[in-house]
Amino acid sequence: AMSSGWEESSLMSDTNISGVKRQRDSSEPSQNGGGGGGLAHQFSLPKTSSEMAAIEKFLQFQDAVPCKIRAKRGCATHPRSIAERVRRTRISERIRKLQELVPNMDKQTNTADMLDLAVDYIKDLQKQVKGLNDSRANCTCSAKHQQYSG
Image (tube, rainbow, N blue to C red; front, top):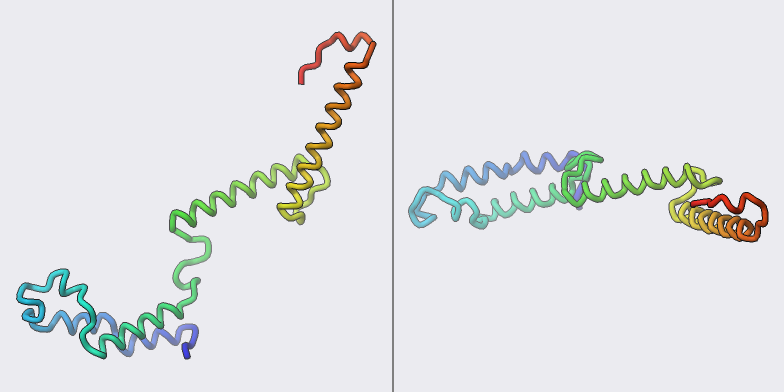
């Protein structure tokens, strides 16, 4: 069973991954078919059971590390994460603008309900405009001759 927290750091100190690499680097170049190391040697698969055990411990350690240790909250650097954060920020700003324009919309109202309220409010305003235009069209007073543009 895996434990959580900082105990995993002891796994790393018991079998040091870089120690395994140093052990491999200090071996004879004949293992590599001559030459002085190179990429083929550097990226070769583990040959001994101790190397495999060290890598397995490292992978277990990596899986057990909580996200907050890997990256601080709000410090995402992946382009998709940044784009998503920008998108959410823009939506939040627009929702705040909508809250200012629509009456009876408080900050506790969820986004879907805010949009419903905004739609209802706009439909109501459209009805009012239609009603005012209809009454103006039926008006016989002198104000009718002053054209209203809107």
